[in-house]
Length: 57
Image 1 (spheres, one colour):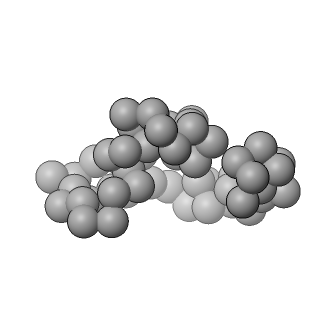
Image 2 (cartoon, one colour):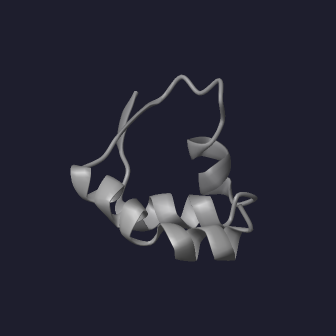
Image 3 (spheres, helix red, strand yellow):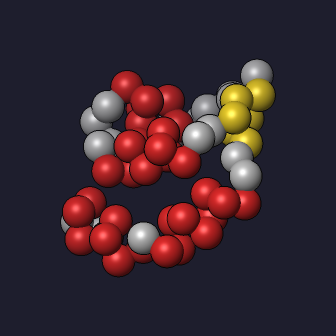
């Protein structure tokens, strides 16, 4: 199945890894195919330090 992932959904999954959406997106043996725009990569890069501090990575 192909699923388009919105930037807000990706951020939500990263910041709350125990949520249902995170469980779906971050499963290593997932049979789903996720797609997004290049904007997601640039948003992640732009907010990398904030994500690291909030998520404790």
